[in-house]
Image 1: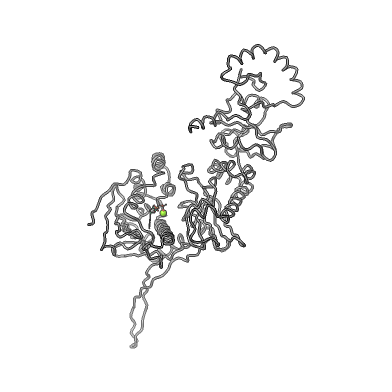
Image 2 (image 1 turned 120 degrees about the horizontal axis):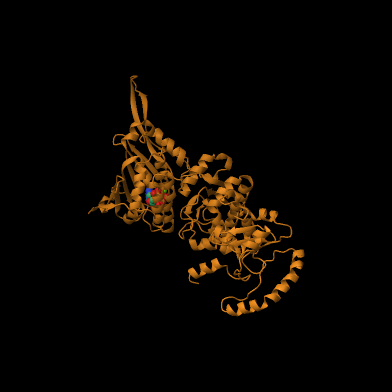
Length: 582
Ligand code: ADP
Ligand code: MG
């Protein structure tokens, strides 16, 4: 029995559909790229599932994507024989937005309203399927998951509801394994020949532009009329239909750099990263010899909204000899480079690798080391050659990269080299005025042999701290570290290129030069005597709260300040530990 249910879209989904339907976005063509991209993912998934489960009842001998047009009914259908979706998956994946991002989506939508370009919003949340509503006033999806008997039919006109029904048993002919998506095209688009998505040349052009590298054949039936002359010399028109493959299927990462043009790389990036914008850097790599692999990595231009969410996935795909193995291969990229997107195709791994095997694979660990070095070197070069680009990159990803100072000891020096910081020399709000540690060292005053820093919640909080007084008075530059991650790494990074990093809020920081020190010594001894009674009294009065009470030379206007021991936790770190219950 095929009971049809009518369900409501989630509120955020409705808002997005609204954006889509009324989109004035001029490049509507990309809906087809999104459908093809989803179909390609589904084929990858099926090939892998069949590999891992020999009993899976699915035919993988001719994985492909079909495009069908019906000029009379004005429909366009994209069909794949990939993994398909169960009924629950259709509701979850198509009717709902990714759960992890829902709150974020809501906030962004509320802020954006009509301000942000819809395509940016759409790209950010990876909801490409909905782009079909830019060109269709009704979308029908029929799908059957590999190994299941019943299929599912979903339909919506993109307003507040959709219908869903199960296509049972004997009807599976109606729902072949895989997914077909039929767009009932809006009249406006077919009348204008520029947007006639039933026209062969239009489809050809879009596939060539956006989806040429897709690894599976994208096929379409092409009608050809031929003039035939019979024996009597009469000429008649004969129509033949031929199936043609529209894409070249060439793996981009396997081609040499100068064979690929920039636009192809960018399209590929948009496909694998589910992005709508251009990548910031394109990094093709190749290694031959004992462990052979090809890689194509991308640094994105913008950080995703869930960069700091626990579920955020690392974006490097693993292929083995051109066969897709998995998304987000954690063994290929360390966590602090989780924003890097791309593909690694390893030649000598077994197609049958499991997560467990991957974790111990020495070859993969070596590939990871090479990729990390290359990514860091790319950032370093960017800083040297294209400062502004680097500054944009650092604004988006700096907070994540600094996590590597704790976790990646091998590359610590390089990460320190490419990191930028706000310091007391940075004008308020001047991002371009960030300093590297090397620049700091070059500016150090005569006799200064340490890099001074202070951590805190904000620049203002640090600058109004009594610890700053003496440094300000003497004109020493201080790094102002306000990212939460700064608290984590500064304690375990003792020096930069031989110069110690020292917190101005800890221990006894001596700012005097040798001469000044001698001069002050006598003075201080006298003061110690003069104030001995006061110090003894303060010590006993504050006995349970502080370890020691000292006269200070570091204050200029404040009467007193609290100082941590050299090896104490900073107050903010202490607060973080307390908050996490430790
Ligand atoms: P994204 O591709 O970024 O995840 P989409 O809106 O394009 O977002 O697709 C949402 C989800 O719907 C996909 O992640 C996938 O799980 C599912 N899906 C879409 N199209 C297909 C398809 N042709 N076959 C199987 N699953 C699909
Ligand atoms: Mg998609």
